[in-house]
Image (tube, rainbow, N blue to C red; front, side, top):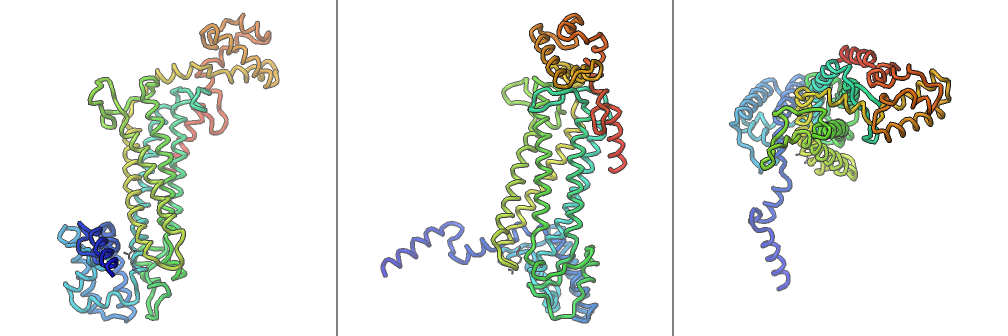
Length: 467
Ligand code: ARG
């Protein structure tokens, strides 16, 4: 028995600090979601107004009670918006905070609002509405980022730069073409967002706790009032489904990966060694100790935010993977992941859009780099195939010898004298110099989707018509 006493005492001491009052305080702390789900206040109130209106329309509550409820809810909305609302942790979450305040404002009629619903369908509704709005915002922001790239692509449809594979100079491309690669990526992200909006466009309210309800509710009416295409079809799935949140996080993770690759390129391009772009002061910082430095902090932070978004996706997948149907309290942990990822994604898109619009492109540096590293070697091989009838493999071998010679002479391919080239292969004529410049190389790649300025302009027109 003495042991028991010691046990209780030591665990009480362990609670200590903020848990001084014991199990009640611990339960309140672990159970309450108001600290973060208060973000859902507007959706909660909208949902309740639609629900109460439907209840009255169906004769389940009186019009008089409905009017009181709607008036009270609108009052609460202005109180919260005006910062005049006191959230209480004892009341656990946003749903109970609003309902308790409604009771204070309008009395017993407040008790009728929760007829034919449960917090399970209520939270599913509020969160879906929130995620839907966030997806719509993301769609707009991606459109802005695509527009920034289209402008830069148009401006630089002819500016040559080295194209890389393995981050080694491969073949010359245009900066416009490179920008359009990002337009494709963010275009795919945006279409994923649009699909996700279609997927989630079903109203959960009326699924009640999990089994539906015996009251003669009209779920089509609430769906319509809340801007959903239709009601969900299975009440069990409705309260246990968080696919819409996971889809948002997957889309955010993929878009974040694209943003991070762009961030990485900007970090590389803005080094003095590359010098392809110069970031505006707005998106870079100086060093407190090294006066020559201009650091690409915004790009680096975009790169880092992506790690955080990935974490949220993995967290929610993990939260959900072991849950039996239908609702479990585990699901309360969905919101912080989504809120945090949404904030990171919005910031990352905004910062990137600003950087892309503001950065100065050093076309001279890009052009010089494009011409180095024997970037037109493939053009020489292609010329040998086309003009001298060599099989490509032989042409590749001949070109390899030309590159080796240029390397040992310390010059570019275009700087090799004709006699030297002819010593490597007799069929070479002075016409070959037409393809050895980077401009000629780029202009020749007219295949659909290729880097020729004429092709890049066609792709810009394609996207302009869709943006
Ligand atoms: N705060 C809860 C959540 O976010 C609301 C739903 C509570 N439902 C329940 N049966 N306890 O998930």
